[in-house]
Length: 201
Image (cartoon, rainbow, N blue to C red; front, side, top):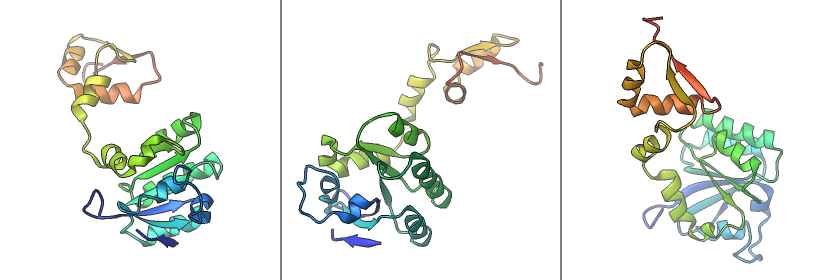
């Protein structure tokens, strides 16, 4: 693990493990508009450590409980290896955020987000110019559950919920958006879910 010289948001620097050959091969000669220079330029907010191999990175994460963030160049390794990395990080440190960088916002990026990546940047995104603020907003800010419930627990959100026995079941769900949210997210790929009560069935 190679350290890069560098207070998060003026308070503390986040100890950040950057995984990928492009991170390790960076010499400082590239424009700060290009990856990975645009990331590694933020040494005011992050204390970067660089590792090219995923196996070595997992060993570092297992041994160092002080790591605050993991940045992954997701273009270098096969999708299966990057997914395995995210899974292993979650098993070792469930609350350790993994941020992925890809050339495009494509199906690979969306897959990695579904598999547990905390956030994503395209490598040339203008958002990287405010990397610290972006990480603070999207990774470490409190979850706005009220907004999430309003978005995903509405009656018109797929799947459609139908009572198996009594409309009282739907009335109960309408008064409990948390339950409706859980059902909607669990069965998001379904068109309709029928609600049954075990004590009445």
